[in-house]
Image (cartoon, rainbow, N blue to C red; front, side, top):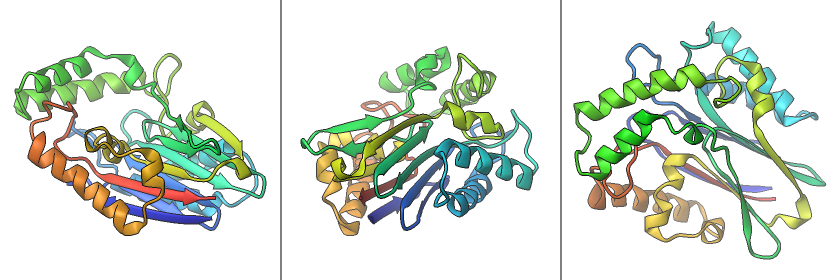
Length: 263
């Protein structure tokens, strides 16, 4: 399997991508807008290491993720509700199958032999439709910009999200609860039917619409092309939408990470 990656960190620098002979691991640590919550850098570093050491082993990807979450929580001495969290996107390729797992809003795009593609994604956090989320997006769309009220709404939003984290009827994410792994969105494809797979964090995926760049186009890019794509996305945000009015988002700039795998 050939894998090409590119990253463009922002202030948080909480994205991670790790590659093995037969797998890709992508993590997007949640930015802590609430000062009472810890940053996610150490969490994604540790979770990435735990996944990297296990993902080539035979077995269900959900079991592997559950073991990695448990080991990370033990190593960092974390407790539910007050711990950092991260999305997880995994690709593992064997002789027969391309296996996908996603937990959180990092999409995995799977090319098909008919030149179309599937998007494997987890929308449960967005589907909560919390009022604070609607409010901050509405304010940005009206032109208020990233003012103190905006960041106050984000702090309130994260407190509300924690009430729904890793429980039925809410959303599931990598934090301290190994059972979250068994609530991940999974898919598998015959490997001969998959010409390419693209994994992206939401910071990289979001600017693609205004850039008018398609997933099949991205799948053809080399490392330089991927880096230039991320730079174009960052430039669009800075030059055309610095206040999040056209594309309301929690931060002016997010970490951007993308990987193209050719099974």
